[in-house]
Picture 1 (cartoon, each protein chain N blue to C red):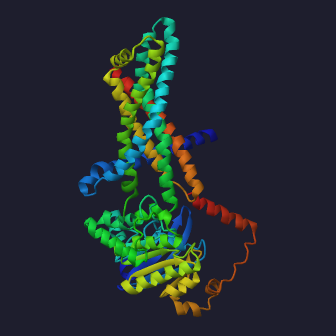
Picture 2 (cartoon, one colour; picture 1 turned 90 degrees about the horizontal axis):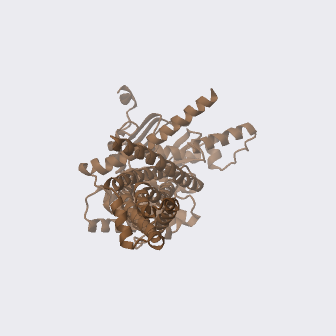
Picture 3 (cartoon, one colour; picture 1 turned 180 degrees about the vertical axis):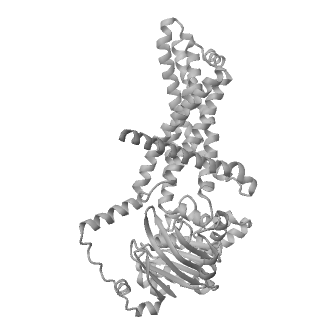
Length: 265
Length: 277
């Protein structure tokens, strides 16, 4: 019986957590889509500077990681394909697995490490130093002022970064293709492009938008629910990273399953 | 509506608190507080650590929800008004937080100008002039391009006061204005509060445990202990009070050590529970 009640308790807690994230996302959506028509403009400047931070500044490290991931994928795929004399399918394997799955996922994980944690730390510190309270006493909504620009920046930048990650992954794969599998660079690239359907790219991008929203919701929520004291900021930053990775995987699963069943019919 | 008639706050009062109760979870922090603050008056809320004075201040500015009672600010009961009405009230009050609570990512000038940029449609040039004026009022002229991290503790507090003054508030709240400052800088902040009071006839509510500062700036004082008002009166009345609890606080008599281990443990766990809320 005790086990049952524990399971029940943690299910309720998880649902409450998801509910809290959804409510935060809902309020941000209100400030993005409804409030501008009621005289509360979107903070474009803040959104742009956030986009610069989460997007542009992530490019070097993301490029490096996804280039290597592409190379690793090519090596792994070739190991198996070589046995069937099908090594020329390396380009296809890399292109499809990058754009359908690994591009969005690796991008999300890099962004969690750079920005999800930073959101929690920034907002958590503001909570501890009473800056969030100060915003409220000045009749400025913290969700409008702090959280919404982050949502906008992430929902736009994650798909952009994902496209970049896909490209870098394919380039990484081409290094192997050219060096080991008798491809010329142009042939490798055109083989990659030929193997991709628009559907592969679009489903990846839809997922990446959802990842961006999820990461922002978790990071900001953890920041806003920071308790008192500096050690609490560290704790909520850690929680933000762990929960974001978990939530991104769940969202990934849900959407991949959704696309699978939709394309079946 | 009946209670409104019987309990109706005096017309001269800018802030009226009636039987205010605040809970953190199960535990009641304030047990029915009532007092009035008249226009242009400086009220100092005194109390030791954990007395509930900070909770009282946070409730007055709408950061905590009361579990019962009323808080009338400018004729509106903020315990029961809509968020948009609350925002309208908030534009007429200023709050200076204990650590300043300046936004670290903005310059001092941007901090002070933030409420103006958010809530008014003033020209940028007007805002520039206003923010210089506000900084001058608190003795920080020329510091608008500094980051908060480059300011000393006392300057941060001054900048926070400038930000609280930005919208020309009718009521100004201070949370521990002299906490963490050396006596000379603290005296400077007291002086600033006095100047604001004389220059603008502003209603000022200060929460502090600094007696010297309280005696200097207060018109009236409220002493809070364990969530109840122990005494309320003018500075002279408080000085002359013979109430043991008032005397103990004003004469700085040490509290006897908590003798029973169980009480101490309970105090600790309650404190933890409150924080982990």
